Amino acid sequence: MVTGEYELTELVGISGTHLEVKDTKGHILYNKENAIKGKFAFTTEEYDIFEVCFETKMPDSQKHHLSAEHTTKEVTLRMKHGIETKDYDALAKANKLKPLEVELSRLEDLSSAIVSDFAYMKLREEEMRNTNESTNNKVLYFSIFSMCCLMSLAVWQVLYLRRYFKAKKLID
Image (cartoon, rainbow, N blue to C red; front, side, top):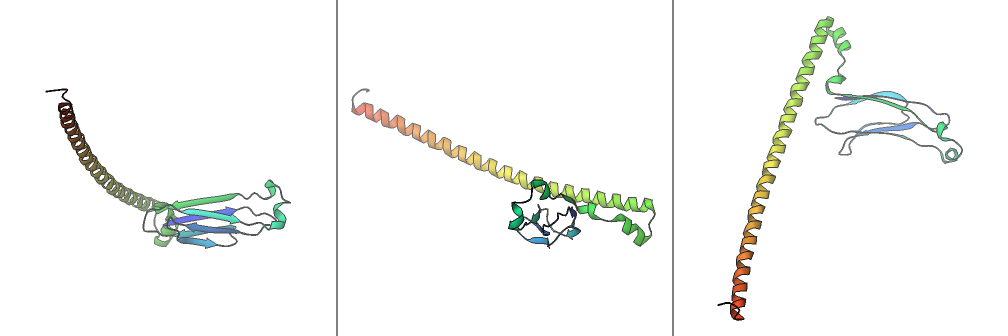
């Protein structure tokens, strides 16, 4: 789960801002015209990098007449993912939980998130180790092949030079 909260300063005479959130595959996860203040949320199955783009277009007639301080917008963006997105206050009200129970629930969720992160790290470590071992084997075989080529070239060179010098009667 990924949530975001944004707020933009408004500028007089400038049209609204377009907000778009994409993943690395180019899928549009959130899209809004005239975004000034709001929230968004979406869920993903995989770890990914997200691109959040705010685009404000000015009419051509105003581009040359306004200074930089009149065309600058300030964007405040707060993004949360995973366990950070869970609203424990709403959970406490819905289930009529005591503060200690809410804290225990939060700690339980946090520990399960840590366990899943460690499982993901272990999986990535196994993949990296397998890649490393595969590369190591390829380098070993390439080194053996290179040494065999060098040895065969050295033997051929010695035999060729011996035959050449015998033909020229420089050696017996």
